[in-house]
Image (cartoon, rainbow, N blue to C red; front, top):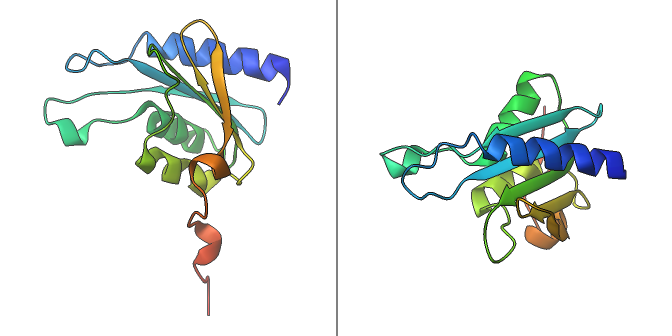
Length: 137
């Protein structure tokens, strides 16, 4: 991932975070990912009064990538305003795993800067993925 890619991810995640729908928690999150063709796809969290049916920012970014024809996550950045770096929840780590490789960079940022860097394998070790399912017998 090049610096221009990182700059574009940060710009997209920070911008979409401003449009998050977080009236209950007040915790706005933006995510942007880079696909295999160099496209940037962003999503924000969307809360719901029936709490379990809200959507994470990462899930929105992945849905945007799929809708645009992308199939592989090359890198993903999550932006939130928190004293500690914010990483994807467990469910989103598994969602990312569906479209990424163990070494895929997962970055955590504040509204001002990238604060931490991980790989998918660091956040979801010994994970279950598409290759574990036998296709066509």
